[in-house]
Length: 379
Ligand SMILES: NC(=O)C1=CN([C@@H]2O[C@H](COP(=O)(O)OP(=O)(O)OC[C@H]3O[C@@H](n4cnc5c(N)ncnc54)[C@H](OP(=O)(O)O)[C@@H]3O)[C@@H](O)[C@H]2O)C=CC1
Ligand SMILES: CC(=O)[C@@H](O)[C@H](O)COP(=O)(O)O
Ligand SMILES: [Mn+2]
Image 1 (cartoon, rainbow, N blue to C red):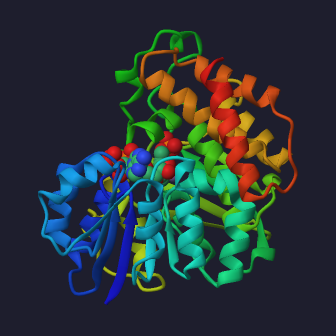
Image 2: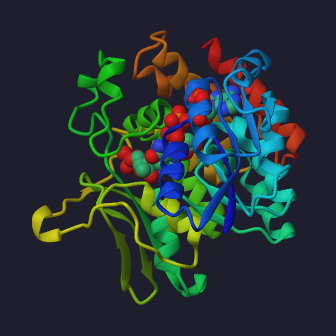
């Protein structure tokens, strides 16, 4: 029986992780879950999966939840509560499915406690990839990718030497506005931006897909997960999201991973690795799909991706600023405070104001993240 804890159990990745668990009740037990504000769903998850430790965003919510669940469950709240669920249980693997760089300290705590990591929360790796990978190596912890593209690359690389890689290609659906010109993006609404063509995901990542910041975060995530240079990472628009990504080796042979867009496949692979088991996903039938399409990436159309590459190449604290500015800009867009195209302006101006710090320690990352959020909030 593999014991798991989930940070962000009430979100898109969290609920799909629990769906995978419910399809294999003999294989998995749930030690801990952490959510933010959705306590009715947390109460339901507690009744169904019997975690020992549960965390919510605030003390008031923890008190409300206490009235709805069996007295044996240990309830926590706030950042300390996340650390408790990340590191204070007997879990073998922690699924990091919080949204944003707020997941950084709990991911590091889980690693320090020797938990394997099912990594969905890409912002942690963007913000502090050098620290996360260093700690994981020191503690002998595997970072098992859940992000669909990185799971694809991980599966393609199985048993292959990193020295044999020429390039990897991350595929991008193009997001909600892939067929619109920049002129047509001026007055798009939040509701339109939230309509991803292929995936049902949380609000923040859906907006990131529309700006292509998501692929930018994924480029930096791939750099850290696979130890590749930015020159070895390419992005290709593939509107169907059937090829989840591919590796081109130095003999120019290409290995790709394909499947219908269903996150339960990469989630389950991270939980069962190196074993493969049946999933609840439907089968891909290529004869029904008929054809697959590809388009060259246009960096003028999607400047957030260009800024992500530049931030990754600049290194040090720059990706952390890119990430924090993006998080704030997306939140402001979702609240109707800025327009869609201003997301990229907020990121660009915040990056312009930043003075890079090389190899920042955790405390410096936290301080720089705070500075970037404050700066991005008032641009
Ligand atoms: N969704 C997807 O298909 C994919 C997602 N990812 C990545 O996975 C991560 C999660 O994405 P997704 O599941 O879509 O996001 P969601 O917005 O659906 O879920 C976010 C989760 O974080 C929790 N949360 C938010 N704020 C707090 C807080 N202050 N304290 C505790 N918990 C909090 C939410 O709790 P609550 O709702 O209870 O407030 C929720 O459980 C992101 O990093 C994303 O980029 C990667 C690949 C695919
Ligand atoms: C499911 C997943 O991994 C997302 O990150 C997905 O990749 C978003 O789609 P696009 O960024 O390709 O639009
Ligand atoms: Mn992805």
